[in-house]
Image (cartoon, rainbow, N blue to C red; front, side, top):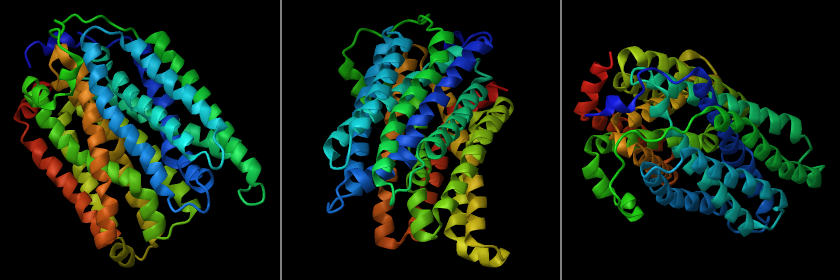
Length: 435
């Protein structure tokens, strides 16, 4: 990693810049929490899709898979532009405005407007995912190599606070009507919630654009090459072999994480029979444990290195998923309800959600070739989306062999990721050099 020390600052950026950067994680978490994960997704399937439609969840899947594929193309292209000297703040501003403004358009989507809704979600989710890669590309400029994990963990951890605040704003303050007795008002409140989330996103992101400096590149810019080269993964792997060895490990253990994120609601209600109130408790537990886990492991990473932190967190995930697999036996042995055991498991898994992603983000910054750090974070976005697609196989395996047995596949994802991570020898040397 010759020249990497030239990339990192001699000391951390001013605290106001780190604060401004972390505020973006707080801002953009509102979109993915409310629109993609918990509120609008369920509303779309139940109220936008006609009641007599043969397809329901499939419509939402079209929007998510479509946006994932588009983001996989755009993320490396945007990274290439950054390496060529494009302003990260301008690119981030565009992605933010596109995501927020088109989310406002969901206000006009009513029952039956399925394809218009899909088109808007495809645009907004693509913009959000590209923005996630852009904001991460600031990380090498804000921290030293030693403190990169702490800064990354701070941003990722506070992002879960944004998810909590946005959930309270929407579910407690805005959406209060009875979905049966006040159907029209209930739909209208969901439409207004999309405008509220858009305004929240823009307002909370303002400190990022005011406080974070967009430093010009001091390293040699990449040679003039067509943007198509950014999509040639084989060529990119030859240019950054160590980074790609890490990416292949990242792909598998993140597939395990993404499986839990995407299917936890289906598993907890369909397999365990948890109520909506129970799901709220699980959400709160995972949000706060993820917050403290990301920040806490960020502090630990400063002393032991990112590699050891990742192995510990992967072990926590294996324990948590194994607990889910044997949850009925554990509940009987401890003489506890399945709900209470699952809540404990959710706390453990939540601790690993934020920390594993924060540590992975800091490792991308550490392993990237200095003049190609923009491309590195663009490719990180690609592998993150590939992990989502790999996670989608859980539904197929669950239908074939049961949800409980499908958990064994999730454990396998983490084990394969750990094995591949152990093979990144340069990462081991780097972790020792950081201490």
